[in-house]
Length: 200
Ligand SMILES: [Zn+2]
View 1: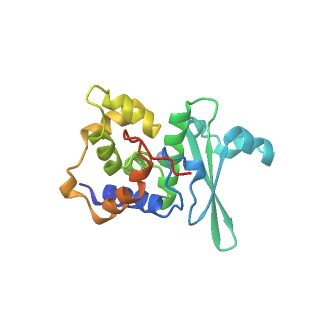
View 2 (view 1 turned 90 degrees about the horizontal axis):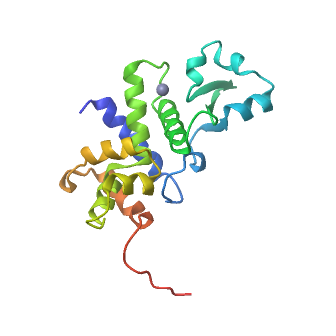
């Protein structure tokens, strides 16, 4: 596989492993980041900053269909502001957009060329629906369950993303050390069919 795509997935897993809590589905807005990342809706940001949508996107309205990231220099550090279009899209679509934008930030992309887009998409898919967790979840699924619907529901992703993940499942023997660590930490957050014991 393309090394840059592998790197994008590694960075997504690293971000998941750096979280204190391991809740699923992953909520991008609740993640903690090792750099300054603010997430806001386009509408709210415009009201708060007194700017217009046109000013924000410098005339490039297409950039705002799903969302975009603004970079502000504050002294020697960068502040990233991810803006999403809350009106136009479903919650799952918004979540993918946020994960995709976080991907651009962590991959330190400077522009939106097709290769950067593919990398940001790979980052987003691994962040919201990590391959090892998808495989573990599918392994424990009742035979009569619809795997695509169940994956989409549990990880709060679109059906098409769940379908793609189903096709790209990896064999357990090929997991990297990082994937094994991710599985060990997040396994507890997966739905499970056996009855828990209530202790207090
Ligand atoms: Zn992009």
